[in-house]
Amino acid sequence: MVMIKFHILGAGGALPTLQHNPAAYLVEVDGLALVLDPGPGALVRMARAGLLPGGVDDIAQVLLSHLHPDHSLDVIALLFALHSPLPESRAPLEILGPPGLRALLRAFTGIYGRWLQPRQRELITTEIAPGWSRNLPGGGAVTAFAVNHPQDRLSKHSLGFGFQDRQGHLAVYSGDTGPSDRLEEAARGADLLVVECSTPDDLTTPGHMCPRDVGRLCAAAGPRRVALTHQYPPAAALDLAALVGNEFDGPVVQAVDGTVLTVPEPTGEPT
Image (cartoon, rainbow, N blue to C red; front, top):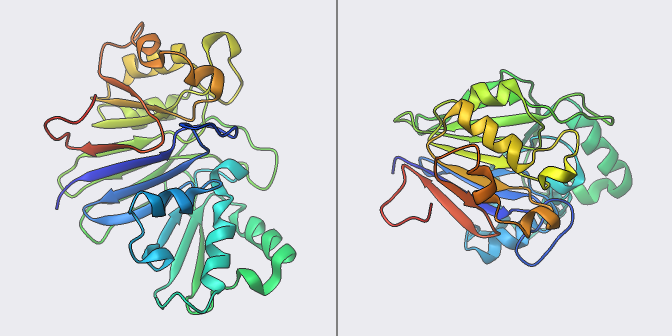
């Protein structure tokens, strides 16, 4: 099946609420599932959504946009689960993220020791930088680009990702970022842009986006459809789609946990 299906299982920031929990995404590209930014509770939300029918054996690749805990903490839960004798898969597990990922995993292992060693599976740790790309088995591709989210621990890089199916449909994920020329370039003409909208305009925070920022980005880049994620409670309480609409006249979805978006868009999918 040729398509991209973007599951937003955590549409909030670091402060959990009923409908906006920390980052958790699963992206299907031509049927291949990629776990993206598994923050606290991500595995539970994936299981509840029916996305792990085979349990953790179903997870083959994990992508991290950056190393903050609200985007990476369930890596610990995944590795601990794979230390159990119950999972049966012997396929390698690959975790990919910006430089500093290996240091983060070493630090986790320094705390938990062998409890984070998968019992059956080889663990492959791959550090990636802006400009990285990989062809996917179905004929699609995933690429990484730099975004504007300053880091002061472990890594100097924060990444956004582009996911392309074999027919050329494109979904772009911003990760955490402030206004960014590279994000604008990556999002230009995208079929779907999943973009952070962390704060109201009057609470703008460096390294993050507010509705005004998102609207201006989208007006310049022209994505066909936009989904707003990484909403902290003051932002989630607003009609963010309407506020973005002050600058951008395309379709905008204010995501909640459980929002699923498909590219190309099927008839009847909410916009």
